[in-house]
Length: 326
Image (tube, rainbow, N blue to C red; front, top):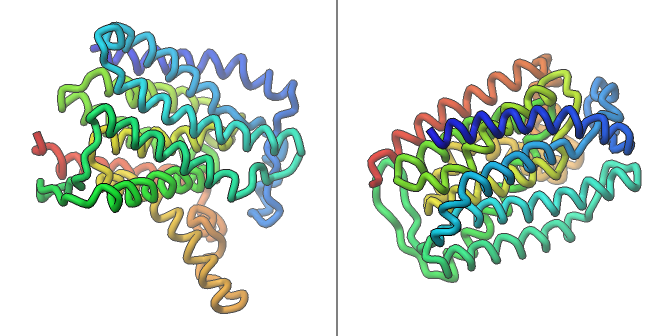
């Protein structure tokens, strides 16, 4: 019941905050700059407010702190650790968005600046989880219900790579109206159900709050979008996805629940490598892959439905793979 209340309150808060934030972003002229190399029909989105992720971030923050207050007084902080981890990534995204808006250009922080900041946050989170006893150096393998123990140094290198890669993959998914929200919503349902079924209702508060928050955000972000989440929102969501996977000590589950993120990132990597190797040839019409389908005639709504639907199916499969773990 507490999780359902969290979802409903987060939804209502996000919708309310959207009524306040969107006019404010318009007044501040915090409009999105559209990439010149992107689909030409995206030019009509020029000036649509960005940094809209602040509304579901604020809603999640309020719901997690309020809902987990009693647990926090009792000495349980796991929900705050994942929230804080996500907030740090959201802060990196906010700085990136602020630079874009202030400088009126599509590029914010440099790739190196973002990488250094993301590595620092990832390592700090992993150190905190290990210090708190929530992290082991065993990699749980879904379906087989066995764990593969790694050397701690190897595990930390693996974990850091997964976190930074996952966060940026979620960021790449935020390329058309509602896509990152629609894909991440079922992922958060999966994590909320998993944490709750494993007896960690306090940890489940965070993904539950994001379920409501993302549903509320889609009221404004579904095509045609009235606001974009920006890097503020997409990096926060990336932190939430991999933060929950490591808090539950099962990073490999990201292969299933995050299949769309992985495909988006791989399509971008393959496109760049093939382009350089062949001196200008392309495999996809445009990368990431949602643009490939878009330029092939798929509407943004169709891409949203198909990609979100695939994620729902993969989350159900992931649940079958881990439901007998405990």
